[in-house]
Length: 70
Image: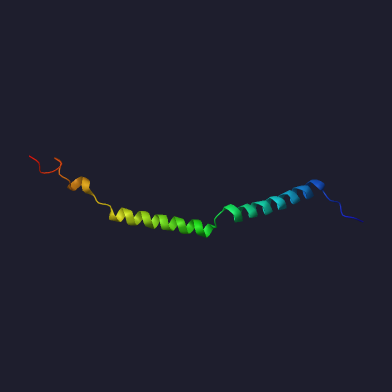
């Protein structure tokens, strides 16, 4: 005897497989790996921390008059 097959399940499984293959091709063509995105995020965080550490706080030290003109 042959096995009874639900045609909807077979069709949907085939569509999922094709969609997965297309998605993989698109990721390879257009995307970046998770490691690359994580690395860029870490570099951006580090860059922001470096800039914030080098920031000058002139607002409290600056004279109110704008200089020593008389």
